[in-house]
Image (cartoon, rainbow, N blue to C red; front, side, top):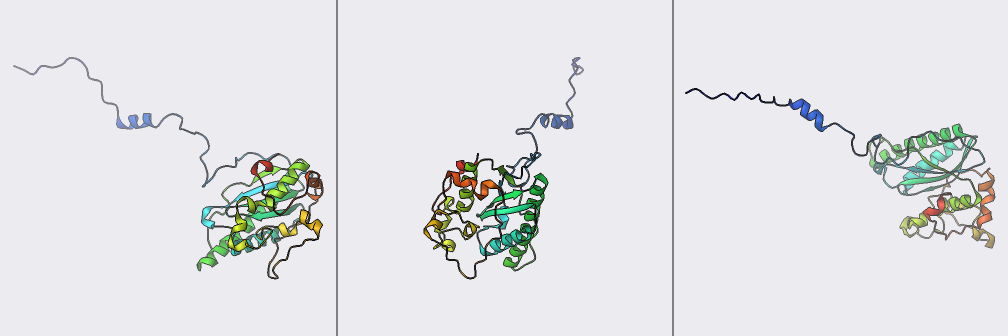
Amino acid sequence: MGRRVDSRKRKPAEPVQLMLLKTRGGKRRGAGRKPKGWRSAERHETRPEHDAQHPVHVVLRVVSAVGSLRRRLAYRAIRTATLVTAVRTDFRIVHLSIQRTHVHMLVEADDKAALSAGMHGFQISAAKQLNAAIGKERGGPRRRGTVFPDRFHAVVISSPRQARHALSYVINNWRKHGEQYEAVARGWKIDPFSSAAAFQGWTEWTDGFSWILPPTYQLLVVQPARTWMLREGWQRDGAISYMDVPSARHAAP
């Protein structure tokens, strides 16, 4: 007796490659541009035109491989970058503070191109100096790699009240992070890792109070404000004390 043959046609097996293609199709979760580096908070959008009358609050973040910026070699590296930037006539760093993972700056620029070029020049100089300093600290060759992983974050200051809050936020930022309790800054009333010593609008100045700085201390290189808001407009909303603890919500318009 012969083997019974099933007359029904069997469906051929789907090729493996085709099955793989089907499982990989469709829109991936969180579709869009892939994040770059360790952080992708700053969108790569065209920046608006810049009005020279409006100062800008800038934030720059560094990669974790750089380590804390609140140490002597990092301070010297960033100070050198402020010195290099000071030769520009269309861009000015008015105030600056160095925190562990980021730098706050209040800057003025003649226009959009000057703001971009000034920040670009500062970042290049700071990155070179930091990489060289880190290599020297480790007793090896110059560090190679990214220092600032993102575009700088910029908030345009458009009112006297915002200018006052931005000033306090930048020069008193160390109190927000509790850095005044660290050994390296203990005994200081103002942040040694900032341009606070150059600020002449402190409430305490009116009482004849002055800062006593160590003879070896080198100030960060900043320039006098030219915009009305950073020069005098901010005073409409009250003086700034070195004891003020800034709030993040006050840094925005």
